[in-house]
Image (cartoon, rainbow, N blue to C red; front, side, top):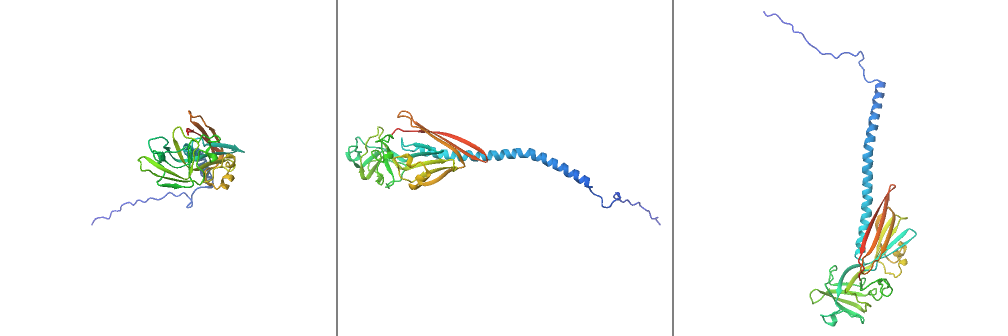
Length: 301
């Protein structure tokens, strides 16, 4: 009979610390917290600068975009303005820019070929004539009593469209434009007939939808665009928000947070384009950016 063998048994026991409730002491906890605070503080120092830089850059980008968008819109309006109709004023920190907005243009027929009925008569009031090279920016047939036709506006007394005489049709004139039976020509009809005082050396005729104004008021912090109001000869009667709103203008804010602006206009000559300089400043949280734009103005009537 085999003898029963006894095998040794192994067991692992956790060494006793002598205290079944052992853990961190208060001193160890305080030291750990102190080290953690130091580490977090150093980390915050290194992270805060890039974060602040990103925030500043994002703010500057917003300001630049806002100023650039406003200047681009102003530039587009100026480029399509009736020649010699841009004018500016400045008073008590507020600056104003006004122009007559051209929506289309063509060349009127004055000389043969074509019958006398197709030609524009400058010696008497004419109620119907043709244009060579049709209007392209309007849907035809076109009819309006709120638009104007202008020829040879040079911006001097007797030939100033803001006078609503000689070089521009009177307010309320019905203007009808339709394709003519002759290819490449449009027929223009005026009710009632109007005598243009001067012919254009380049035979240009402009279709206008009225004036546009920009008022920059740094005190209110806004740049505002105004449309849909009556033309006035004196710019001083249309160079404030109150005057424009009283004249029936519709207002659209182009930029806010405006801190300053300047509009400077050099009309140029017949041989040299005019130059409009626009400067606009916009600020936020104590930081201001200023953008400058220059627009060439074709003043050949």
